[in-house]
Length: 53
Image (cartoon, rainbow, N blue to C red; front, side, top):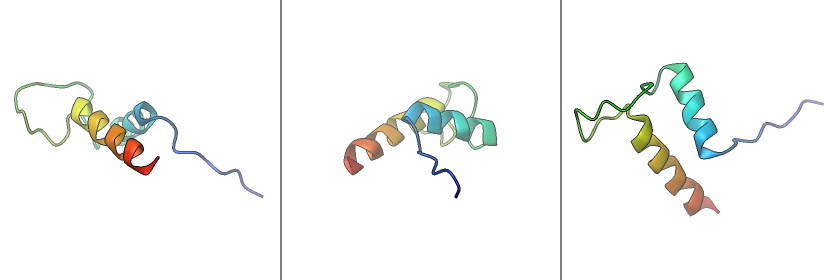
């Protein structure tokens, strides 16, 4: 039987997305609506976690 993997904390999810290349490594602050910003992604993921809990 295989192990079931948990999603982890929101920070873990952001780290995985950064490693995959979906997000930037740092926030550039040049564009307020940057889709690849790790800071905004963390806020979105935290909101999703609160909504699902």
